[in-house]
Length: 231
Image 1 (cartoon, rainbow, N blue to C red):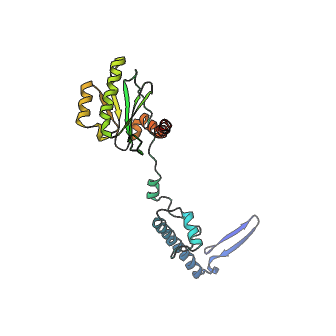
Image 2 (cartoon, rainbow, N blue to C red):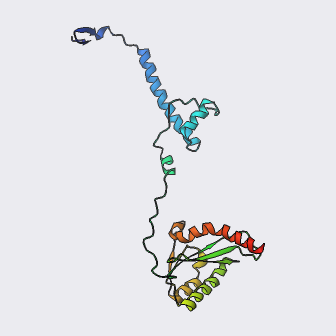
Image 3 (cartoon, rainbow, N blue to C red):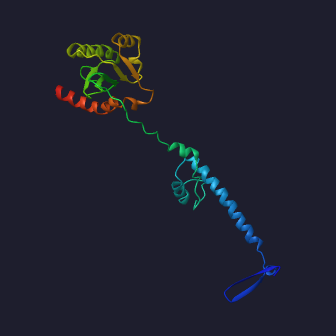
């Protein structure tokens, strides 16, 4: 047939003339409008998603269902754009830091140093503490400080103590980038003893993880021991 086609299965076939098929234009218009409304709805969902600080679309559905927000029409199966760039960026995590490959070959060769505080004043007004951790043995020495500036004198005494007793010279100090230990008198002290300095990058304490991990457990320990001694 020129204006039709045959339809059937097996032995029985029927001829259909397309000239006899009536097209409901109103129905086509409704379907087209529905597709247009769906597109607008999806756009509006994305707008409300941004207005509420990139809230989850399921939460938006709850708000629209109970009509808690004026102007937020009912959201049924529509969802916000899954490729929202801001949401993707916000969920990104920092890459894993590689484990340190090298380690000191002898005791007191490398020292991890860090100043922590201020904390609640003790009876002797000590608000800070400084830690010296041997990279080789992980032995930790802790000294309390009244002010951060006292760290210089404490380190000098620490250095003299081990240099005189066991005749070992520290080769490298690993610390954060704090200005207290980057002053001219600190630099002169490093140069005097031939000590290399390794500073961490700003906002990257993972580079001195040995000292940072110790600092997380040290404050409660110091408080408990202080209360025990004073009590």
